[in-house]
Image (tube, rainbow, N blue to C red):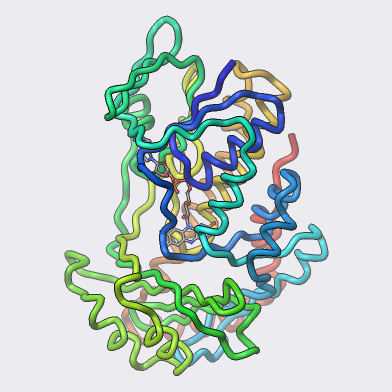
Length: 377
Ligand SMILES: Cc1cc2nc3c(=O)[nH]c(=O)nc-3n(C[C@H](O)[C@H](O)[C@H](O)COP(=O)(O)OP(=O)(O)OC[C@H]3O[C@@H](n4cnc5c(N)ncnc54)[C@H](O)[C@@H]3O)c2cc1C
């Protein structure tokens, strides 16, 4: 059996590594000519790092990233509203939360693949069922017959659109800018993720390497993201703490990535016969909880264990049973958090901030306890 994976994102690559380690042959088909990293960082939370520990990648990821021991929501002046102390989970699971450059992570994952070919320049254009499985067509003219297909092709998945058509992408009306700058944060911020909430906008930043800071900024728009210009970015955050202004000032404008934030409305069917969706193609979420890639990484672990334990015929239904409730819980909670973070009304903002301040740390811990717990197979 060969498992064909569409997409060489974090989900596709991690799944290929996990399957290879179980002795299952895989091939990857990726649309781009070159695997180019988005100029951004990523936070691999404790659940993702537990998976990478199982795959033998924890140490190398830790060596190339920066540990994060607390996640804070603050006011625009960086006065804390709520703080999630991650040291409890570090001790419990013996893994840290790691902030890392996306390109560095991709390189680590690609290097780890021993026998899986990554077929670049293969954009899947159609997938159709036939008596032998699935017939795949690519935009370079190549066509292949496949017995087993994993759709790891992201939010706009072609596999999903062709075989699981009843789903919808939801726009949040939020624009997101991401960048990396050569910068060393003041020492007290070096091992923290800070996200400052203002009025209809917010700004997050984290040290990802000795001299590199990754930041992201989001702002609500009414009709179109064109209401805002990258040239005015510093102006939008001119009332924020001077560290944030410095981070923005030192970033090269041409390297800032701009995107609209969307997710996939939760959908209850992720598999059909021998084709299955993983990562964003199954459950794309807004980035508000920093869990999108972490959930794709959990998929890789659960799916490879299920295939190993049950064989393909039963694996996909077991995978869906184990993964769908948690993934949907994150999609829904993240969607709500995005709305709360961008409130406009000053009274509601005051109430929200008061609630954040008053939420006992035991409640925050309980929520994260569920997120960081891996499924048992
Ligand atoms: C602003 C922002 C910040 C984020 N921060 C975090 C974070 O800190 N932590 C976290 O865990 N998550 C974060 N996420 C979410 C995370 O980036 C995604 O959930 C994750 O990348 C999904 O991985 P994936 O492999 O499923 O999909 P993708 O990363 O979308 O990869 C899909 C791959 O498939 C390829 N592809 C697509 N279509 C085709 C086709 N037709 N044929 C062949 N190949 C195809 C693409 O080129 C790509 O390589 C963030 C997201 C955003 C937008």
